[in-house]
Length: 127
Image (cartoon, rainbow, N blue to C red; front, top):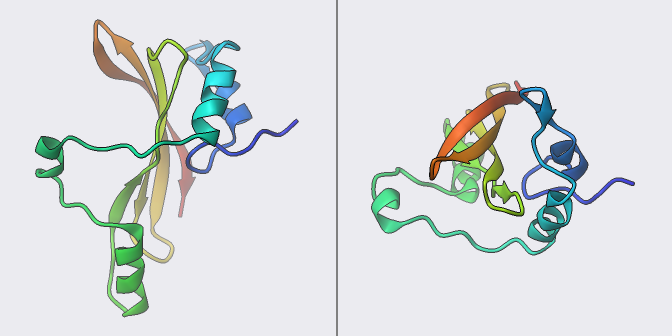
């Protein structure tokens, strides 16, 4: 059975069956939680202190630049999914720079001693 795509462009069964450091990253107990997140994605707000430090844009604004013949480049971060115990997370980060330029990463994070740490990064696409 192929489950609906997670927030972003990876399928949930791909995320659930991913081996990180020679063990399954998410457990079977996480599957329903990840499915619920996918079906009921909520708006995520970035803290104003962090947002003020970012040069942010929207995909729509960048596509207008493209239509007007201007160069664009930006990062696009997908909505993360979390394990049932909120100790593991999966997120995708794409770099888009027009035409045949760009690439994507899958990032696996784990909360260690109260801080999120990247435990593995994988290339998901390259152009």
